Image 1 (cartoon, rainbow, N blue to C red):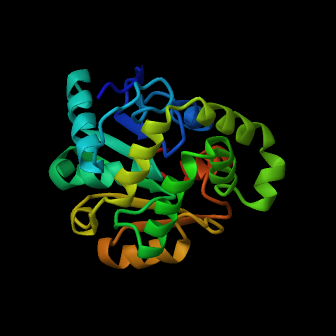
Image 2 (tube, rainbow, N blue to C red):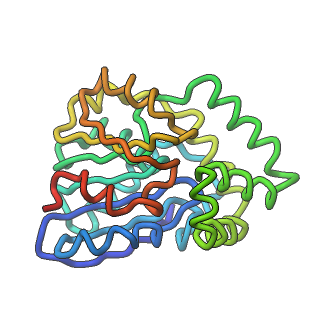
Length: 248
């Protein structure tokens, strides 16, 4: 598994950021003005951005282990972890064995519990649909990440996401869907994480606010709600930064 990453050196603590499904590292650009001075590591998921396509299936835990190896190779021992959607799933798995390395964990539009049965059905439908209608799937999947208002405001962002997604290897897309569908729950592990933060979208239909509220009963994390859909990292970066306690 060959993962692409970008290192932006800084004198402050390290922050490692993981984007979500069908995403890429440039989606964090809106946060950069608020992260000045931090040692930043942007990692791209398999088959996403500049990361190599993944021929073999993998689990979310496999990916967490691979990311741990990568971070160790860079020479970072402790850091703030930030993950959006699928990126948050990976950090939740990371916390199972490596929670001592986390100075904090911020889950953006994400949870640590497994897929609901309804969500698994959606993923299975996607797997059946994507082989025949890849371009249509990308347009639908990405469109569903934004609210009606956001679709009119962020047309350029949505267009770029669709164009990049259409370039992805279909096998990598399928592996990511299966990995998300089959992941276990990590709520017990998250309950042991210090400085656990959830940033939720009030209108997020992918990871609904009510689901995050239910998880917090188990994990005791802090919750911050933004009036947005699923893609808060690109639609509301300033509000995300405002709710990260380690950013002054």
